[in-house]
Length: 279
Ligand code: AMP
Image (cartoon, rainbow, N blue to C red; front, side):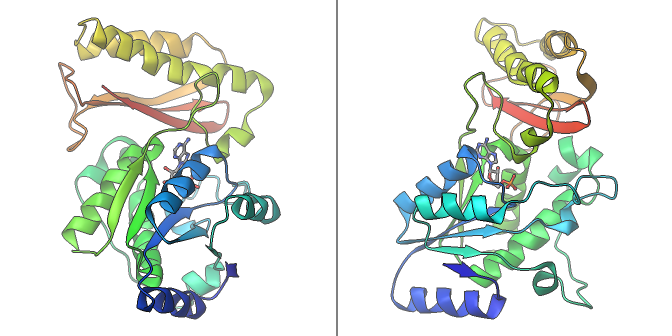
């Protein structure tokens, strides 16, 4: 069932809570794929009711980013949600979420300044603000986030802990295409040649993990090898970062250890793709 108004979404979930039903929540920006579906299925397993939201959140896009051209297809999404037997889709307008005079934000410090945060100022502030709003509207028991956006998952966890929110944050594994490319709504932007080049991102991560498993823990050596793999394709326009960091603090490592995160952001053509793997 499609719900567009905040007041209606609030009264629906209030009634559900009153009836003693557990609520799982999957926030998305739509243009759904198997990655989103994996979160939905996990939520359906864990909860009586699953609410999915689709909202392309202007607050988390930078000025020169792809807010205007971000892929949108509500009818296609509705079909997927029906197939997955999702109970409610929350689909608010921008006006509904950010009415005139809106002027409050919530910001996690520290870990938001690393990795993607260093290149997308304000991005995580936009994410935490919209997610906190959505949590307040839906008041879910559990909320599901993909490890594809590992930093986002950790930032949300931090916000929930710091602000004592009553929601359990569940991280779900990265869903990949057959050749290893992490699924993303943004893959839609890639030309055929770029799509072929994009596979090198995951290949570089898998290769670094293989080297680490063989005993190579020198971060500069691992990064050098990944760079070489990724740069072997002419469609790669720019490596924004390749980092090996502590997966809690996001501090850079010199020697990699089990549990560390290898994360990267790369422009393939004009499309910025991110991926990661945990050692
Ligand atoms: P998005 O619509 O891109 O904002 O993503 C909504 C949620 O789906 C986020 O929690 C993402 O981390 C998650 N997600 C996106 N792609 C994947 C994927 N390939 N595997 C697992 N989760 C994903």
